[in-house]
Image (cartoon, rainbow, N blue to C red):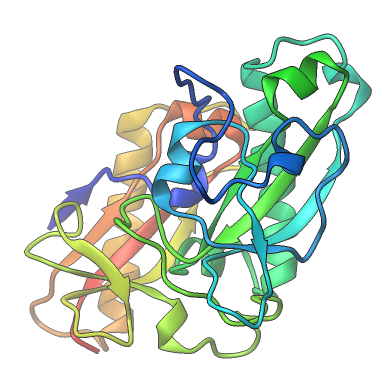
Length: 268
């Protein structure tokens, strides 16, 4: 059995990113967006990379026609609540608010049946705020972008013209997450349409929004027991089988996540 502790990209958005500069650099930058105090455009598409998401909390990448090759789509924007009017630019509460807000809107935008399916998708989301200069000028908005990859992705996959409704009904394996490798923790995350050794099959809900974090040992124990039974049933009760599980910790719990992910050793 594999005890997996890797984080999915969905929860990477909780991290308050810091860098030497908060303004994006490079040829792919739109100068009009850099220090803009205006709300971004919903439905805008961009060619983002994992570095764009990880390096700075603001992003001014040029928009492209959504019919052209792109790796990101803005699915939600909005003004931050009044409680953030006087907070610091890198206040941790901003990440918690963004996690709750973008997660809920992402699930609805994709047409996912539930949060479990979103956690098992090869697409995830990232969020951005205004530049620090724009923040000082009074800008208080957030931008949620769907991206074609996970936290472990070295590069993002091109997206369709829109990811709206991408997980409706029975999703295509191109958009579900699998892994290649001896273990899920060390394996490369790939779409399930590619050859793979592991598939993210289901999730376990470990608590309600108001519940306190039960501790790493309890989370691991509950996840292990549930995933063993769930994966055995999914594989049609074989005599021998392998499974793994991804658990999340207190920081992610405080951000709003209440689930662990169960993986089956399978090429299906």
